[in-house]
Structure formats: C-alpha cells, structure tokens
Image (tube, rainbow, N blue to C red; front, side, top):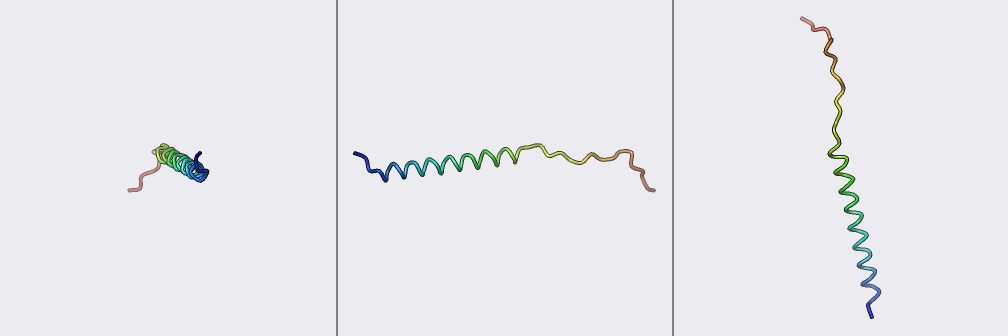
Length: 48
C-alpha cells in the first residue's frame, strides 16, 4: 500500500512543473515577438 502523502507530493510537484513550463513558454513567446518601429518620415524637410 502506498502512502497518500507521497501521491499528494508528486501531484503538487507535477503541478508546479507545469506552471513553470507554462510561465517559461509565455515569456519566450513575448520575448521573441518582432518589435515594430514607428515608420520614419523620409519626406521630412532638412533644415540647413
């Protein structure tokens, strides 16, 4: 017979790992999104 506290510990550890993986996955998606710069106006008058 197994100790129920071992099952609970294993379940908590698995849940924590899943949260960590989800957190890392969401951070990598945000980190690697291309950043769009504001378009530069090339017809801007040049002051001399």
